[in-house]
Amino acid sequence: MNPPSSPDPSRPRVSPVSCSATPPMPARERVPSLLDERGELFTPPRIPELLARARIEEVETEFRAQIDAATGAGLRPTHLDWHCLADGGRDDIFDLTVALAREYGLAVRVWLEPGRRKLRPRGLPVTDHQFLDSFSLDIEGKRARYAELLRALPAGLSEWAVHPGLGTDEWRAIEPDGWRVRRSDYAFLTSPETRELLCEEGIVVIDYRALQQVWSRTGTAP
Image (cartoon, rainbow, N blue to C red; front, side):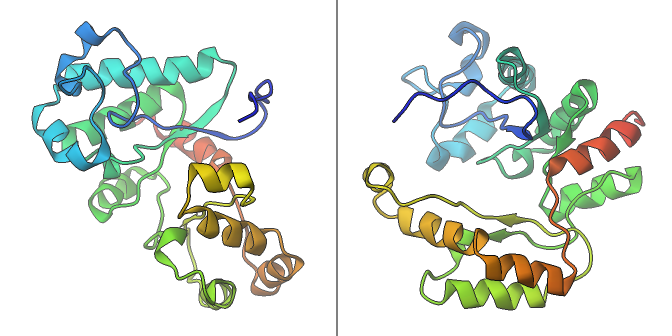
């Protein structure tokens, strides 16, 4: 792959705080409960094992290191996302992440109902409906299905996890199965018909900058 260009700090960014599938950011001896027998963070299939042994103070060390690495590279994250750890996977990890978001002036991507119930009384915006993962849709007929879902979109804040990509030879080699999902997502998202449909239905597309502003204003409450 070509090396990335210099980061544009004006673009919205996510800081994916995670304890799985990546090398640890701090020295390994500082986060031993997060590491497998190879000294690496656990892979997604072993998340239950990770959650059973992870010490919360080491989770904080890892999360802080990841956030600081992003901001130290000149990026401006808008929110935190656990990626493979659905809403943190444990109540104490969830609460830690919300506290870190408050400290760093960020939002948190919360999509499971227990977490949403916890944060709504605090005035923190979270999704109102089940989120959509584009990998869950059949590629055949996806364009029509997307249009159907947009026309039926309920009022409130919805989140669609789409995965656009160009389907280049390089990407096909990286992801032999998933590239078709990404190419079909890209085709739909960039089509004039989709833009027209959004206008017809009065759907406002936002990113996490809008949510970050609300979290920053209201997230100081305990």
